Length: 164
Image 1: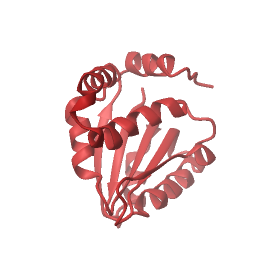
Image 2 (image 1 turned 90 degrees about the horizontal axis):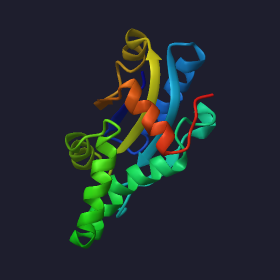
Image 3 (image 1 turned 45 degrees about the vertical axis):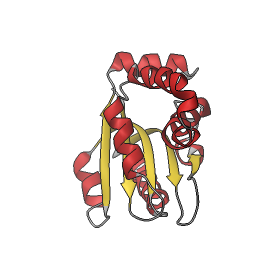
């Protein structure tokens, strides 16, 4: 079973630093990183910068379409306004099919703001004790949405990705 998690950091560099730490934990076989992406929202910018972390996790389980749609929905569609209300409703319903519900989306939208960063992860098995130890001195907030095996398979199928 895979988990989608969002880790929010109080600095714009926190997500990048955390991903580097997680990549090292993966090399130590303490976590399975299936896919990852970062959001960096520097102070003074109108919108965040997003980046899929294929250099650290290899070919991701999800293609760029998933991350693009999720980030577009979370950070860019709210700026467009009510003119796209019906489309937003359809996208929201689509993400719910993958275990990403409205509360998850609202939490992320309200917490990942200018001056912060976030790490979006799709992970497999993890040694929680080792991860907690590695991040014990890091100020962050963890927002989690767990996917069932059926939801994970549907997500992979919908975005044209297969597990290697």
